[in-house]
Image 1 (cartoon, protein in one colour):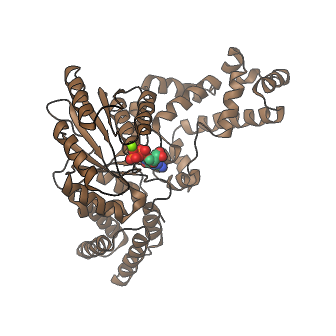
Image 2 (tube, helix red, strand yellow):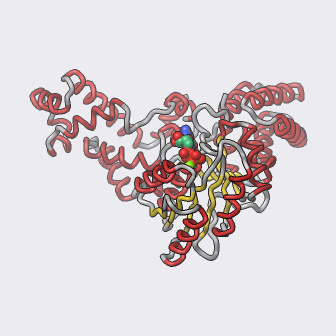
Image 3 (cartoon, protein in one colour):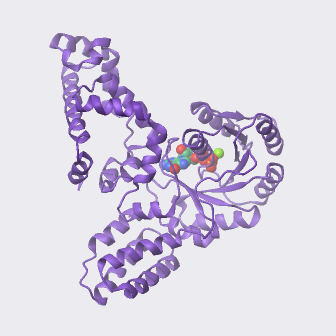
Length: 437
Ligand code: GDP
Ligand code: MG
């Protein structure tokens, strides 16, 4: 019952004869699905009535209905003239304050945003650890930033506003493009937190205040966002945990209810799992048409085009070997979780669902392949055809596997290479999509 499923179900069920009774049926279906996905009833009511009016205006029929739906959805997700994604201040550094309740995903999202700015926008980013409520919080941020190679200013013994002051001075002196400040949260809103945030805000003079909201908390996310907006001020919302069990319906109402644009969406625990919130792209994804633009942007940042071309040539010639496989795994990691990648490809939403939270890097098969490759000689890595039974026995022993496992993995590897060869040809992508239907 996620938002995407609701749209898919509703749209899939719509059988249109070109009359108003059919339209009524379609809107009823859609309404039911949206309410189930946790969309606020007022948002549903407004959406449905404006879709009805627009469809009737253009002539009742499935095409006009879908077009109206697409338009009205884009409308409710958009605030006229509001910034989209990330905007840079004309006077660097751009200072961003990350605020929200405890556990909403502030620290993780600070890391994700730093990674996004570094990888996709090629910016120099400084992170400041201003959550000094819990010592573990600073350590968590230290781990995240070192993993993605981002500079951090932290001092467990300073006050939040002191460390922020130091960090901003460093950023100005050393010409950082962006400063991201991770702040403390509480389980619920309290005055002490609001006072602390006000002091930090005073020192930081932020260009942006991003409210980090947990999609799984449903309508509560809207209410707390409203309170933070009143007490501290916010310029954007980042909705986290849009993957997993969250129904996600809250995303549809947030923008209008809070009056502040959604700027990013977090859909996974890994660093690349952050998407810019661009209304028409999200709508396209919701309606099952995929979001090829976002995927292309991510791929462009993660994949070296020369390398990609070389790889395609190898795959076409059937020369894909174990070294290539490991290289590809490294590159895939930069694109984010398998599920979020699949969700962006038109027609592959279903596949994304089946994949669940499959973790490519840590799957049993991948671990087996990695262990096997580690036991191979350089020549064997280059040429899978070299693997005679004797060599396989040696590799199995070295990798701590039995020969049946080695044979199975090899067979899978070969059929995957064959499949890749097929797909790299003309119309390959379309073939794959047809297969998944
Ligand atoms: P903070 O207290 O606001 O700083 O929250 P954290 O950043 O420590 O995150 C709390 C938990 O939520 C951690 O276990 C994160 O891994 C997890 N988390 C954060 N963002 C996401 C997301 O987009 N998807 C999922 N599945 N988990 C997330
Ligand atoms: Mg935190």
